[in-house]
Image (cartoon, rainbow, N blue to C red; front, top):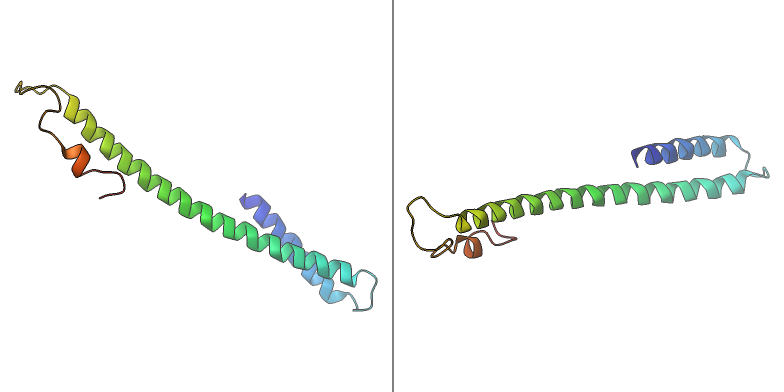
Length: 104
């Protein structure tokens, strides 16, 4: 997506320069002005989407890390212990209380 944003920005700037060079009464002035406005809006949408995507990626990474921690604790709770105490997971409620998803 970065190349699309760069391309939109480059063409937008080129159109802005052309608009500055065209006399207001030139036949293409209005068309170029509309293109400038359109590209400005597109650039805004693309960069806003990019910011939202980065935030979502960070949030997803945090969710993955929390889930990995939860799974590790769950695996430990069902592994037989060397001490031979009861059935796997018996008396071990850390998974449900301390490491609930969304918690810390």
